[in-house]
Structures are given as structure tokens and as C-alpha cells.
Amino acid sequence: MDHIQVDVLNVVFLSLTANLTPKVGDILSHREIASQATIHAALKKLKQKKMISFWSSNDSRAKYVQLTKLGQKRFETLADASANGVNKH
Image 1: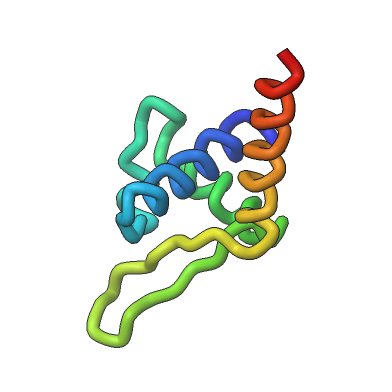
Image 2 (image 1 turned 90 degrees about the vertical axis):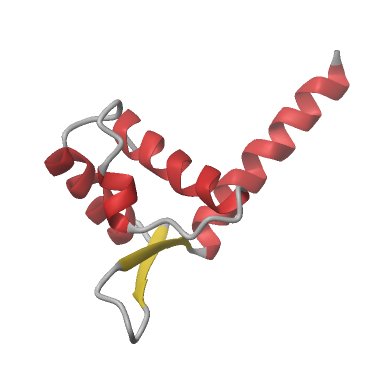
């Protein structure tokens, strides 16, 4: 993954940990990461890599983003590595 994909994935993860349901539009608004077109391309690549998936509710045109099991595993692995690193010092 490139740094933009990592930043986008982090935004999705942080939204979910804050008990928010991130919409694609919410992710696209993070101009500190990149332009909307670049973020959109990153979302597509993350979906192709099976890190995220999209869903829509029946009564809304909004498209929501969620982590897949593979995406969740990435953050679990990072948390484990962080915990192990802290315990070794």
C-alpha cells in the first residue's frame, strides 16, 4: 500500500473506533490527505485489495465504508506489534 492508501485506511479505522459509520463522502473530504480524485482512487485500490468494502442503506443514496476481515487484521497485527514492542523495553 502507498502512503495515501494507508492514510485513507487509517481514517476509516479511526471513524469506526469513534463509533461513526464513515461515508465515502466523509472520506473524500479529507483534503489533508490528497485531492478527492486521489482519495477516490485509493478507495478503489483498497477495495481491490479486499481491505475495505462498501454498502448502502435502502433509504439512502450514501455509500458507506467498512473494514473487511483483512482490513481489521491489519490493525490487530499493528496493535500486537505495538504491544510487544512496549513490553520488550
